[in-house]
Image 1 (cartoon, rainbow, N blue to C red):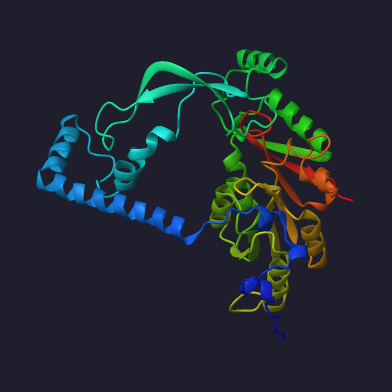
Image 2 (cartoon, helix red, strand yellow):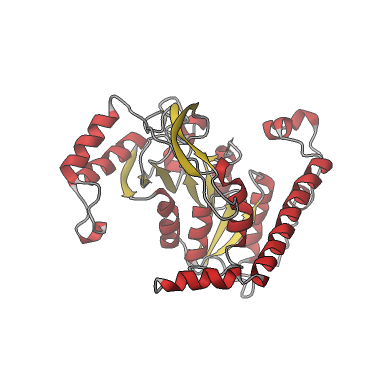
Length: 359
């Protein structure tokens, strides 16, 4: 049986040539060893001090007193003290800069509610003062501004809420499908040039629920190392075998495809029932686009399936906002499974799985 040698770029790092340097190489932040050491030292000190304080609290019977207070109402503590160590000793110290509540629509400008500490920072949450701070919103997925007070969308949303209510209180198959859902699925399919579409009530669940339906035992999933957690959870729930390729590294991806076809299953060497490549249109934490043309070429060459997550690219890329396929000039029919959400560019909630037209 033939062997497929791993490409040099997949197993070992090599310095790229200057003319081949990508945008990631040119603009990547350089974290020098001194700065990195200071960061790790700070976390180590905070953890050490936290454990010392927990020990002193236990000596002073503070933990026992806290448990007794919790049991007075007939309920026990939700978690043990060791389980919520990170929340109490680390997160609570810096909670004032995270999860800051707002009192306005999440548009370009937002009203951030002012908070202040009133006690021990490791034991009390910040409390709101009643004052707000007008801030420019630079950390939102509301790419098109539709999540704020939009003069076109907001009145339609309010009218639909009054007609149908905020929820059907039932699953789609058990009477939870309304005419609005059917119309929305038709609109999504028409917008993307697909045959049909299916909508979900939650963007995260669109990936985590769909992938187990498409893959199972006997399936090999080849996933980008920077794929979202919803994809990771879906792959784990599917029970399929999984290989991870280096981010946007086409040489490593091709090596994995060739190796999977030649070797088959690890023990029996039987051929895989199907091979599925899973990538994202835009990787949210890196801000990079997928190399879709190269991936489509590889999936055609090795007869694999392609699952494309367009959560961040739909509405934000392309001349008419139809995503990374339009941006890169790739036919939608070349994508086997597409996924999109309404939680980013469209300022709502839920997700969709369109069915591309077959040539």
